[in-house]
Length: 419
Image (cartoon, rainbow, N blue to C red):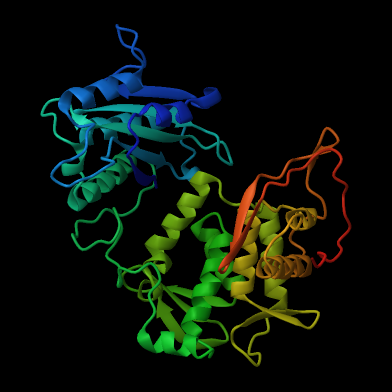
């Protein structure tokens, strides 16, 4: 099922976007519609697009709307499902057919990358904002209905090529491009009664399910793994007549709710879209083996029917919730933490007390679950570098760029120091 994302570009020139997409030869192939990489006058593609906008008067401020930064181009990303094992030729055929159908009268440059986890090819499509026939702006074209048809058309093309695809829809009340009609248009929907319960510090079983689902997505690469993670996290899952997932707590089977009712992000489509985006962007910082080990650790420590339903598990007398696990996985992803050593390196430098305490809590939980190795993988005797990261906790935040070097020693599994 190909994932379609769109982002408007409002810079004065397309040059920066194309330079980024072709930097250091990262593009493995390219295609061009109504333009060329270099034309007969030796103008690069970005200059061709800039001149077309200038001649059509579409690179200046819109006097009617007072827009100081008009849309100069649209950047689309098409990411195929890794399970389809799409090769470059198939992806090129799909993307060119899609662009020619929906942007046949616009200039478009398509660059193909495979720089994500798993080396899965995906496409970046840069569409200039000017119709070369009418000189009209692309903004007038991209209505909600047209965006829905674009995504539905992409799924239909993928299905015709033997690839998996999302179900096409025709409703005008959809919240997002190509998605099924949700029971709510909110990403996370909470009723007034539920908000009152949460504000009072009491237990909300719907919020508990949300946090377990959030954790399950973090531990999964596919829908199949997601269902396994739900079981490990004490969630029951069934399909209703419409094919929507209905979730319940294993310890209280009568507490059940459709994912659509607790927020669009927790609908079946929303979760599958979430998983597809993570696969395409390589966001998962925890390997498949580590995720499986972590699910086993959680399943073995679940306290079914415990004193508080929100408690997910108990390890060495320490109780934790699904929110604790999801927050820890978020922190590991944000700070590129792949070993216990990384927690210590992330603590180097000043930070707010709240941020340090959250880092310590995540370290303790990671240690208890044992899903991270003690030391980061080494290459040629030198430990791999940890990416620069920014980390926010509540109203306070710290930013640090501590990197690995050969002089960084391996640490033992000791407590993160107070500062």
